[in-house]
Each structure stands twice: as C-alpha cells, then as structure tokens.
View (cartoon, rainbow, N blue to C red):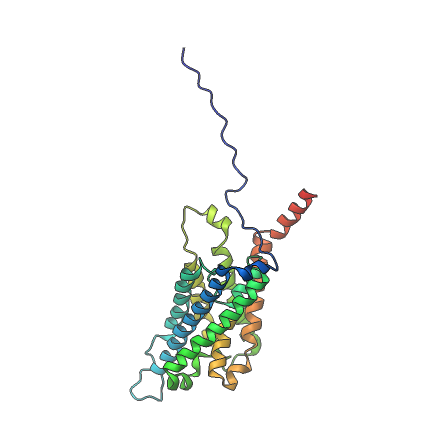
Length: 286
C-alpha cells in the first residue's frame, strides 16, 4: 500500500506583500541630536550647490555661443533648449542617485514640501532641508559667477524671468503644472506598493525623476526659463541681483508649492486612498 502523504495547508499570505513606512511625526526633536540628520543637511546643501553650478554654467554657455552681437557666432549653435533640459534632468538624475540613501535626494524645496504633506518627513527636517537647499543654490550660483563673472553678468546669470509676451497667470500655471509633474513622479517612483507590485520590472527611482525634470524643461523654458524649484530660482536671483530677476520671484515660489501640494494630495489621498485607510484603522481600533 502506498504511503500516504499528508499535505500541509499552504501558508497564509498577507493581504499585501509590502510594508508602508510609518508616517513621519509632525515634530521630531530627536532628529536634532542625530549626526545622520546633519549629514543629510550637508548632502542637500552640496547637491543643490552642484546642481546650480553645472546648470547655470550650461545656460550661460549656451547664451554666449549664440550671442548675435559676437562676430562669427552661429545663432543655431550651442546646446540649445534640448541641451539645457538635458543638463537639468541629467544633474537631477546624478544627484538624486548619489544622495537618495543619505537625505532622500530632494534638492528642491517644492519636493520637500510635497513629501512633508505626504507625511514622509517631519516639519523640522522639511524646514532645515529648505534652508540648506537655498544656501546651496546661492553658493552654487556664487561659484559660477566667481569663475565667469563677465559672462555671468552679461548673460543673465541663469536667473528665471517671465518671458516677454506671457502673462503672470500663464507663468504661474506653467510652474504649477511643471512642479506637479515632478512631485507626482517622485511619489510614484518611491512608492513601496509600486515597488512590490512591479518587482519584476526594476526601476531606478532617480531615472524617472530626472526624466520628468527634462520633459518639464522642454515645455516651460520658453515661458519662465523653468523654475519648478524655488531654491534654484532664489539662488540665481540673489547672486544676479537685478531688478527683473526679482520682479516675478513670487511665481517661482507660489507655483511650485501649489503644484507640490496638489501632487501630494492626488497621490496620497486619491490614488493611495490614505484618508480612507486612516479612517478604517480608526474604526477598527475603536
């Protein structure tokens, strides 16, 4: 008689094969005594400095190469808008890849604000990240000016300005939508549920984030020069310090923060239904 084999019941599987990190506390004073927190601030400062240094020099170099007042210059030469967009997107890809494991690789106050609204970072971390990013942007533009002062002043210092022929509303809308695309991509690329569900399709998070920056620049460089990063716009305006760079500075703060807020609400509370989950958890505990 054949030996009977007792089949064990299959192991129970959890309803989901991923784990959402707990929401960050609103105020986390313990961060202020941790070296890892200050290391993250340094990483954000240096990353934003490098980002502004490379991208501003790219913009200035393009304007110099296509200056119609210079003899023998090909107005169709230089890297063009496509090259400028690649510089911004490529630097974001590189720097997010380098700093993601240390600070999260924000390099943008609007991204930090969106992640704060999504309960990914505390209020203390968000505020100090923004300060570090703005200081890094100022220093990055300062280095660009120090090395090429004549070109820097002659070709606008890479400062964001609303282009002639566009209204303030158009510029604001471009900044809102452009930042929405960026921050929405950040949430999607770092979503633990997506990583678990699509584990068979490995995605390097910095790649779609950098590509989002590239695409937004292609669309909005002719309108605002593309801000979508208040630190980038603020740092360039501080060092260039000409009236036109300050005239519409509010657009490059209000627009990105509104776009980031919409992206955070859309991803966290509509696509991920965080509000419904929180309500369900509250009812269960009650």
